[in-house]
Length: 467
Ligand code: PLP
Image (cartoon, rainbow, N blue to C red; front, side, top):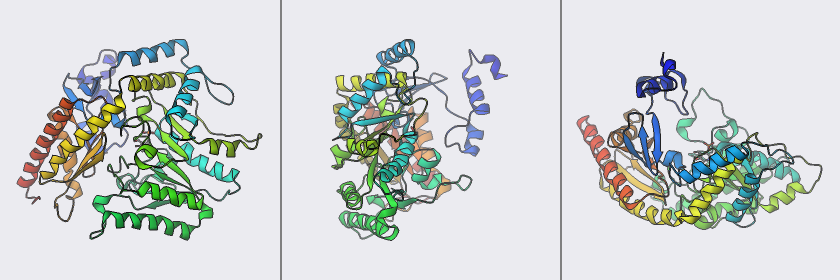
C-alpha cells in the first residue's frame, strides 16, 4: 500500500495517493482517471519543480496568486514567527489580534477613497459571498428590504460557494448535476470586444451593453435590484478587457438607480495590473465594496477580504442594537494576516507594482506577435493578465469543435517543454508572479509559440484547415 510510504514517498507513491484519494477542484473524471495529476513539490520565484525534479516556469502564477514569487525565506519566517507567538485567536464580536488590526488599517490605507472598512474571509469565494449578503443588509438598513437582486455578467467567475457560483456564470461551469440559485440573480452580456456583434464599433458595443443594463433595470424594477458585481477585467471567463469607458458608465447607471457597485478584485488587486487596486486606478470607478484575496498573501496562506466604504458602515451602524451576523472562524486569522502584512511590505520595498507595469507592457507586446500564427485569433489582456485565444477561422472567429481540446493540447505540449500555461475552453491563460524578469517573459513567448506550432501541425495532419 502507498500508505506504507506516507513519510518518505517516491514520486510514484505520491501520484498514487493523489489518484486514489483526492478530489481536485474542477475534476474532469475521464482525464483524471486516465492521467492523474502533475505532483509539484517545490517552488522558487516563478519556477516549480515536480516530484521527479523536472523544472517548469509557472506562467499561471499558481492561480493568479503567487504575486511576490515562491520560496521567500522572510515570508516563511514571518509566518513561522506568528504561528509560534499566536497561531490563533478568534475575531468574533469584540476580540481582535494584532496582525488583523494592523492589516485592516494597512488595507484601508491602500484602498481607494473612503473604503476604510475590512472584513476578513477565508478566500475570494467567501469574500464575494459575504459582499452579496451584505447588499441585502445595507439595502434593508436603508429601508429597501426588497432591493436585493444582483446583476452580474455572463462569463464571470466569482467563486465556488453556492451563492458566489450562482452569481458567476462561466458557460462550462453550469453542469446539470449541480444546482444554482436562479432567483434574484441576472446576467448581462460579457463586455468582450473580440466577440462583439459583427459590424459594430467598440464604442457602439459599449453603448449596447449600457443600454442592456438600463433595460434590465426598467424591466425588473430598481426597487428589486440591490447591486451590480463585476470583475474589472473578467479573469477566468477569458481575460476580458471591457471597452473604453464601460465600467465607469455601468457605475453611473448604478448611481442613478441606487445599486451598490461591487468590484470583484480577487485577481486584479495587489499588483496584477500594476496597482494596489485596479477599479479606480485603471477604470476611474470607486466601488462601494471591493472583494479581494489571492495576491493579498501571494498564496502563501489562504486569506480574503471584503473592503467597503465608511458610508456603508455608517448606514449599518446607525442602529446600536443591530448585529452583523456573518463571518468565519478563520476571519482575521493571525498567521494569514501576518503573511498579508509581510507580503505588502515586500511589494513596497521591491517596487513590485513598478515591475508589474514594466514587465506587463513587455509581456503584452511580446505575446501579441503570436497573432501571426494561423491558430491564434487574438492575444489580449492588461498588465500581467494575458491570454491567447485559438480559432479555426481568423475571419469568422469560429472556434475549433469542443472535443478537439486544442488549448489543453497546447498546455500539455508546453508542459513537456518546461512551461505551465493554463488551458481554458479555447484559451491559454497566463498571470505570472510580479517578480518576472525579461528573460522569463522571453522564455514564455518562445516556448508558447513552439507549443502552438506543434499543435497546429498536428491539427493540420488531422485534416483541419486553419487560418
Ligand atoms: N472572484 C474571482 C474574480 C476569482 O477569480 C476567484 C478565483 O479564481 C474567486 C472570486 C474565488 O476565489 P477563491 O478561489 O479564493 O475562493
